[in-house]
Length: 102
Image (cartoon, rainbow, N blue to C red; front, side, top):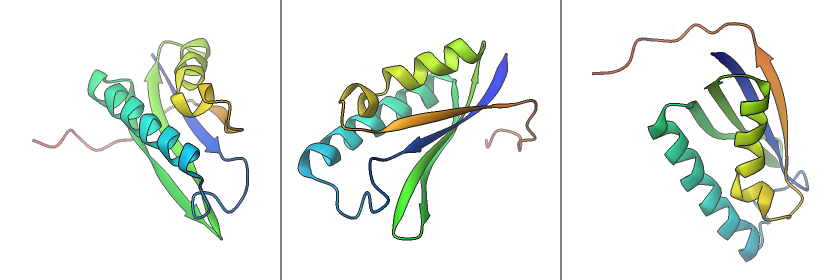
């Protein structure tokens, strides 16, 4: 298995503060998609990162290889919506994580 950092970039630096109805509906589907991936075990951590006047998204995933990370990104409803979002996919040679909460 391999780890990857996925950075979701929006079509403009002020998103989500000026998100359209269509964009916010796609973001809801995006959040549901990643929640399913977290429950399935491939997504370790997912969430927004606020920076300046806008935000970008991040996910740390554990998958078989770069192609599997790309497939996760390509299947995200925010990408398939065609609204101008895109992912950077960066390999992580290792991670240190806390033990699972009980």
